[in-house]
Image (cartoon, rainbow, N blue to C red):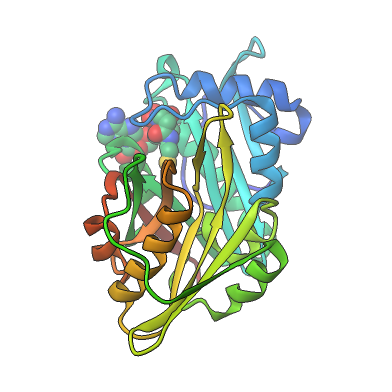
Length: 295
Ligand SMILES: CC(C)(COP(=O)(O)OP(=O)(O)OC[C@H]1O[C@@H](n2cnc3c(N)ncnc32)[C@H](O)[C@@H]1OP(=O)(O)O)[C@@H](O)C(=O)NCCC(=O)NCCS
């Protein structure tokens, strides 16, 4: 395990071990314990954490767990590794162990591991108004770059009639559309992540004299009843993005009138966003993307 040059006074009894020394069940339990008081409840089970690790290229060898002198886990932090960049995720310290620089120590290890791999850029997202984490990241040299919204549209009738023709595509055809993207995706919505998602589909809509575009989305069954689409990428080929978004959503909700839709990480600068709001999407919360570049 490597250490960066950030000056951190480490408690003498604190042990730091790579996350690869633990089972997924142990990591899941530790993660859930650090998040009991989290702003947005996001408990995980072992299967979901394993899927998360695989989808987002989390390297358990480069991730770290902090323990006290008795072997009790106090916190953990994970590092995603992709060409040229690293990603900080799942950072948490037990509520009773906070403000002892354990978070800073975990970050220090991750940043040291990223540097050790020659990765000069590290990215992360922090929920807006998570002041402890935001301050910690500023202290570690991160700077805010952009904001993302997490949006939700509960089941509701479509707000407009579909126009033009719609073509529904399977996963392979959906993946083939992604190189056309013009948005600024986050780690979890970039093509490398989507390539790992099994239940991907797409819709292409063409309305002469109006516009054309596509929607790539992930279908997820939730308690066997509703569908939640957590990944949802809109792209305009011709025409104005809000108008094309309207066309796509009209076709989507005509086909799936009961759809409960959740969208992760829509950039506030996304030109389709005003139409998403007009069509009934509500902001659940915001994330701030932060980046740290080293020379
Ligand atoms: C964010 C978190 C990991 C910080 O861990 P921690 O061990 O308590 O933090 P540290 O003691 O290492 O603090 C390092 C610096 O972060 C900032 N910071 C930490 N907690 C803070 C707080 N409650 N208020 C303001 N700043 C805070 C300070 O700058 C602090 O330095 P200082 O104590 O010398 O002033 C912890 O609060 C936590 O687990 N929160 C819940 C999960 C979470 O939010 N994870 C991050 C998701 S992106």
